[in-house]
Image 1 (cartoon, rainbow, N blue to C red):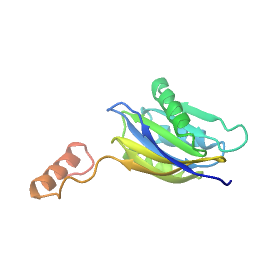
Image 2 (cartoon, rainbow, N blue to C red):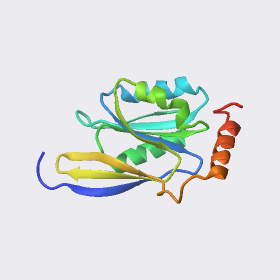
Image 3 (spheres, rainbow, N blue to C red):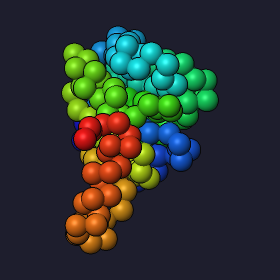
Amino acid sequence: MDGPVELGIVAIEKPDDVNVILGQAHFIKTVEDLYEAVAGSVPDARFGLAFSEASGDRLVRLEGTDDALTALARDTALALGAGHSFVIYLRDCYPINVLNAVKAVQEVCTVFCATANEVAVVVARSSGGSGILGVIDGAPPAGVEDAAAAAERVALLRRFGYKRG
C-alpha cells in the first residue's frame, strides 16, 4: 500500500440509552465469539454487533439479539469501512458487564472505547484500505472533582449496585 492517506472523522450514531464498544479483531469466527462473549455475560442483554472482514469476501458479518441494534452495528461498520474492526451496541446492560469477556476473545486485538458518550472515530483511508487511528470519546474536562462531587460519585456507584456500604 502506498500513496496518499486521507484522514476523516466518522461520528458513531446511537440512541441515548445505548452503549457502544468499538474494537479491532481478526479472523472470520470473531463475530460468533463476540456474540457468545456478550450473551454469556448478560443472558438477557439486547445487543447487535458487526465485524468487518479485511480479506477474502470482505463482508460485514452480523450477530445480535436485537434487530434494530444489529442494523445500527451494520450501518456503523459500513460507515467506518475499516477492516478487522468490530462494533457492539448494548441496551439493558453496560460495557462493564461484558468488557472483560469481549477482551478475552482470542481474536480481539484492541478495544478503542466502551462508552455511552458521543463518539467520533478518526479513520485513515488509503488506496489499499482504511483503519481506525483512535476515538474522540465525550467532551473535555470541565473542572476537577471536589468533595461534593466525590460524595456523589460514591453514592452513584452504590445506587447502581457496583459498590457496597
